[in-house]
Length: 294
Image (cartoon, rainbow, N blue to C red; front, side, top):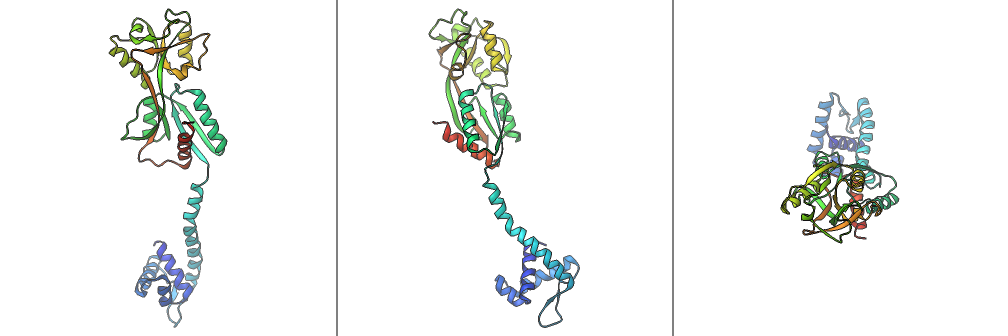
């Protein structure tokens, strides 16, 4: 039994004629007759009394007609209701972002989005880029912000930022008064770095090796605040994006441009190709595309 069986049955009951029902539905009379016969065989009882010239519903047919009309009405309204629900600006979007994300700009983005779409809930989870990608792959995260160029075969994406890395040190550190510093000049320093599940960890290590030395890592952490506090106590140096450095207290942290080479920190907004995103997530993506260039 499918919806066509019910529609054909209702039309025959309305017209009290197989011929007129066939004309109304633009199908052959034989098709109508077969549909009704198949329906009666499946149900195990007769729907029509065919003994008179004008067919009449049986008592069971009368009851079945009432329920059939309800089912067809619900079916016809289904697409309209789903379309209406899809247009409602509500729902939830789950975003994974690394702690290194520039907090001021991103907070402004979230604030403006929330003003416009008050009924959409946003869940934020802080992870390293590698963990964020795993979350997008398994569906636990809708949208991710990662600190490396995304795989174009796996993700849709657009650039969030391209920011040079700077060196941060304690004001007491020997290089704190320099206007710029080359990476090779840090070969004897101890580094405070993000953990290995952060892409920036590998970017920094690989560039140090290319500059001729293996960095000595004294601490690995997931927390930017802990990192900067350790640097402020002169336990080591760290490399952070310049926009992040601009948010630090200049009384306790000195930020110096990194040169030779200049390393850029690329951040991208990504979501999985081939995965259906709810309307809330799609609205956030479109809003971010328009907001970020401003």
